[in-house]
Image (cartoon, rainbow, N blue to C red):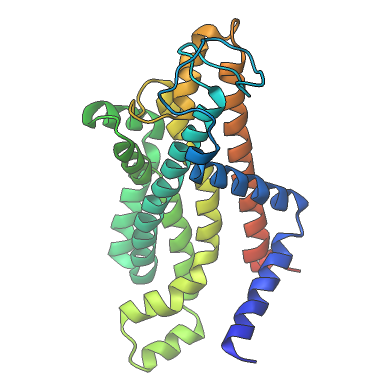
Length: 283
């Protein structure tokens, strides 16, 4: 069987294992819909970001989800807010994963004093309350969207590092690693070509679950007024809605539903990936 056929077969097996959970497939569909809505927000949104109409209009034919206190279309703002939430979620987790993989791989492979030092640093980051530290850093350095992404990334890497370290500690004792050493492979080659590909599945599952956490953290910061004021976000919409909940319930309800669907979908996808990539669950 050629290489392409083997890859297609492996992909089919992963999909079969993933789709055993109906909830995971539903979650994947929800996530795909949200991603497509964010990508094509400028096409799907019936109104632009600066289009203002009558304020506090309830859901109707002209405004599918009503208007807010400024007369902006809530449905359009949710679409634009999806761009911010997904950008922060994916980029923050990418940053977090890169840091966590570097720390976990070096710590687990070399062990000894290197492992000791890196794990103490990891524990230090884990002991500090992430949310309050994020508030302090953003208050000091500004609330641009890239600052928010960086802050979330540097505060959420320890779980990835500890997870990958555990995988490296188990894999580096395997026979194929000893065989690689005997063939003269360098530490860099052993880490990147032999151990890391076998250690990534749990990291991928963890990353999929962290995206929803990053979105919730960005939403919380925006709700407190610490998000980027130049971009629309779901947290900003909730912040603007808190004074008018009795008068215009839709201002808070629909952004809340968008947050719920997105984070739930990501968590369900994470469960499905765990089933597909965890060899202990494949029987």
